[in-house]
Image: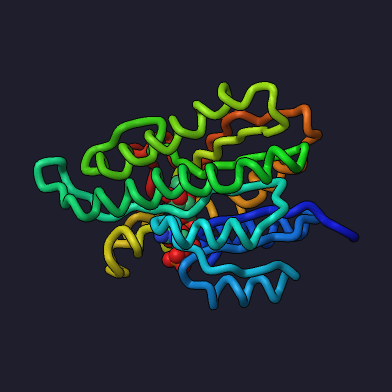
Length: 245
Ligand code: NAP
C-alpha cells in the first residue's frame, strides 16, 4: 500500500502496546513504536514493517525528539503507563506516586500535545488512550494508581469536548485484568506476587485488548467509540473476581 496511515503506539515494547502495534499493522497502518526499551520495539518493528523510535514519556526532550521523527500521524495510542506498589494510603511511597503520575498522566499530556497538530493536519485523527477500570472506581491499596488513571482519563475525556469541530476522534479503552508485565512492574520484579494476581482466573490477554483498539481505529471516521470497558468474564470489579480454587 502506498502512503499507509501512520499510527504511534507508546509503550510498544511489551504487553498491550506490543500487541496493539501488531494488530494495527495487520489493519493497514504503518506503526511507529515508542518505549524506553527501543531494542524490543525494533524487533517488533522489523516483524511488522514498522519503525522504532526511543521514547521516554517522562522526559520532555525525548518526547520532542520522538514527535520530530513523526511528521505524519493519523492515530495516537497513549498506552505507556503502569502501576508501582499496592499499599494503603498511610504507607504510600511518594516516589511510586510520582512515577505513576509522571508516566500515566504527564506522559499522556506530553504525547498528546506533541502530536495533536499532526493528528489535526491528517484530516482524520484519532487518539486512543488506554486507561483502566482503575479510572472508573477506587480500590483498597490502589490510590496512587487509581488516582493517576482517573487523572489520565479526565485529560482524555476533556479533549472530547475541546476538540469538537476538529477532525479528531477520541476513544478511551478501560481494561480490567490483563496478563502482561504489569504486575511484575507493580511488584518490582516479584514473580510470585505477580502470578498471584492471576491465580484461579482466566485474565484478558494483551491481544484481547489490541483487537478492541484496532476495531475502534477502523470504524468509519464519523463513528466515535467514546469509551470501551473490557474485563475477564470472571471479574466484576477491580476488587471482586471469581477464582477457581
Ligand atoms: P507492560 O507490559 O508493563 O507495558 C507497559 C509499557 O509501558 C511498556 O512497553 C513500557 O516500556 C512502557 N513504559 C513505561 N514507562 C514508560 C516511559 N517512561 N516512557 C515510555 N514508555 C514507558 O503493561 P501493560 O499491561 O501492557 O500496560 C499497558 C497500559 O495498560 C498501561 O497504561 C496500564 O496502566 C494499562 N492497563 C493495564 C492493565 C493490566 O491488567 N495489565 C489493566 C488496565 C490498564 P519501557 O519499559 O520499554 O519504556
